Length: 316
Image 1 (tube, rainbow, N blue to C red):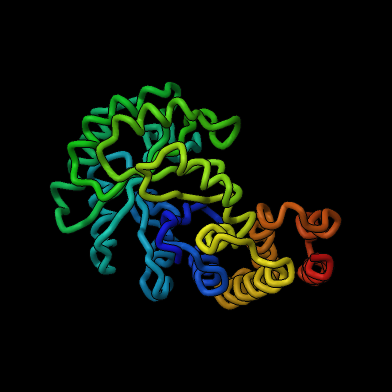
Image 2 (image 1 turned 30 degrees about the vertical axis):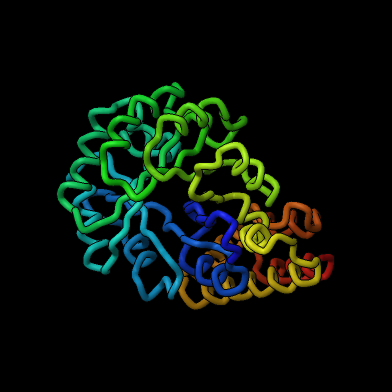
């Protein structure tokens, strides 16, 4: 990687950046400093089985991988951390940014931001009970108000966090509307911790622009932009785009590797495999053949899916 470029972190997205995708992306495209897992959570008193499987070291190869957790209370955080430690992890990311209403109403993710005492109890439990772990925190500006993150700055600055990632939207926006540059700048000016930016990054020029505006950043976190263009981090690090032929070749390899991993892993037959592969195409290559993509998203037969994918690749 280019030493003059900031490290790129692959943001976790539930249902998209699972271990099959991460392994394939790291091998075929690269350019990523760190991959995060989609958040691990406690449900009905137990950690979800798929979360346990997803973060197992055997399923994450040699990449730099940090498991992420989401928890509304210290006891649930401790339950998840016991698993992380069992698996040998010495880094963990705490999610205070998830905007999904079903979780928010239970004070998970961005739903905690209006409750600074709850955030304090959660984060202090983490760093005091697990001093051997390097914790980081991902958050939004707030749930309804952009100053909610500012109220947390004294706490974040006080704690021994490895870094903080800020997505400059409100939770109630989810992923709609535009990012709030003024809100990010206010947090940036007051944050003493290594700070990463996350939100609406689609091109290497976007990264350059953000870094120029906020030169103290230590990294950039990208989610949907990397799902749309899996070469984005590599192109930024190398300073030039992939050729169209090389991009087509690599996307085909990515698809085939993920498809085969799901085919081997999933037990629900063609329908489950088809459902998983539809999500693979939701963000990928927004400029690709629209008719082929429409067939991919509407088909109920795996054979039709494979024909549509072949057509799409033929047009790249």
